[in-house]
Image 1 (cartoon, rainbow, N blue to C red):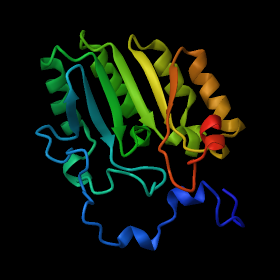
Image 2 (image 1 turned 120 degrees about the vertical axis):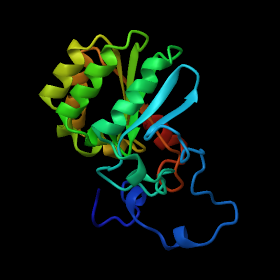
Image 3 (image 1 turned 135 degrees about the horizontal axis):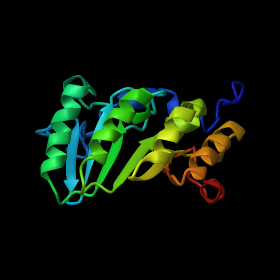
Image 4 (image 1 turned 120 degrees about the horizontal axis):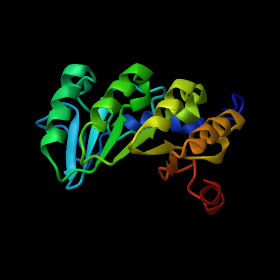
Length: 208
C-alpha cells in the first residue's frame, strides 16, 4: 500500500467510505441467509459440502465483506462448537468436503487447526479440506513450517483458496509461502471480488 497514493487499490479495499452509511432500500445484512444455522458456525448449503466458520476474526477489515453483520459472538470458534459441528459432519455421510472459512480460518492457531484436521481425518466420507483465507497475502508468515508440514501428512486433499483482488498485493514473501504449499501438493486457487475502482478493468483482471 502506497501511503502517498489516495487511489491505491489496496487502500480502497479497506478504507471506510461515508457512502457506506447511506440508507439503501435493497440492502440486506444477511444477503446469503447464513445467520439462522441450527449448528453453531456450520453452514450446510450444498449437498456434498459444509462450511465451518473456524474463527470470527480477520487480519484486515475488508469493506466489501458480506459477513460484517454475522453474529460471531453466537458462533464462536471453540472446541465446544467445533465438536457439535464435527458430530453433524460424522452423521451426514453425503458430505465429502469441509470448507474452513470465517472470519478467517487461519486466525486459528496451528494446534487448533491440527486438532480440527485430526478429527476430520477420522471421518471416512470426508475427502477434501478447502481453506479460504486472506491471511497468506496479508501476513505471508502465517504459512508456518508447522502448518505446511501438517498439510503434507494429511490424508485429505488440501485446497488453499487465497483472497487476492489486485496484483499489487502479491510480493516475494507471499510467493515463497505459496511455493512451500505447492511443494507439499496443496492445490492453490484464488478468489477475487470485482470491486469498482480496484480491479474493474481488463488490465487488472488479466493480472489477477
